[in-house]
Image (cartoon, rainbow, N blue to C red; front, side, top):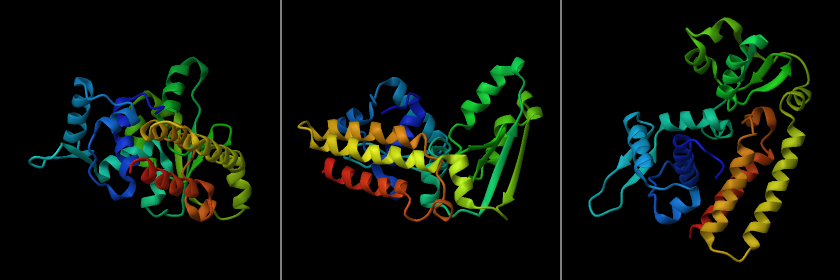
Length: 248
């Protein structure tokens, strides 16, 4: 699947099986195989932890297999790793966030740690040490660095776009054309996978692995910025069609 961290893998798995319907998911043998999830003690402990944190709901019905449902809180954690999904559910407020940090080389460990944490926030480089995102990440940033050593090196702003060609900005910051090419390559890979002679769950596992790979790169720009016909939206709809076919 391409996700190592067990917590993120479980949340992502539940969402990819149900998307915005937030329906309950049973971790059947097929689903475990597709998402590389084994219901061992570590996984059960993670499921318990996610339930206590109200990121997922545990659904218990007499004479029915145990199932789990993603909550709104769980979805909000998911989009910190995969920002593409945010504006499928929420409406963009029209604001851009600017993050600036200058952490000296002698504190490289702090800088690398900060970069790892913000990697899924849809940030794109505007200028050296200035990063841009349409996502409302200010509160998450405060939670991340507030009261820590990194705080003294970080500044953040919120702004409206008031002048300049947005298309030029989007290409400079988020490399739209390059990402679009990657989506087109994804479609080719999906076509090859679907034409292979192998069990449906094997195909679906490959489809998801390829999809997750590009979702890690997609900054999740809202349609108001990137356009209603953005290929990423098309890919999501195609994925849902493939899911329906391979899980039938």
